[in-house]
Length: 82
Image (tube, rainbow, N blue to C red; front, side):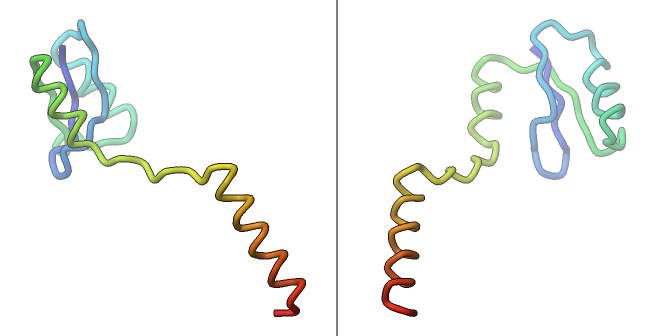
């Protein structure tokens, strides 16, 4: 499997399981990255897992319960005239 990473941050740009060398670099360039800012390399399954683990995690989205609590709070403020 081949991966394309942003050199400065280690951010995963793309992964392909059966890519031809150079394909991921070309895809990154087409997506607006400079060739000097990205690297393509062959990785093992364990290296792939390490790359995934190192990626930034998205902020958790509010749940329905969070919205209801916020709504209840806002209604209480209105009722109290605050």
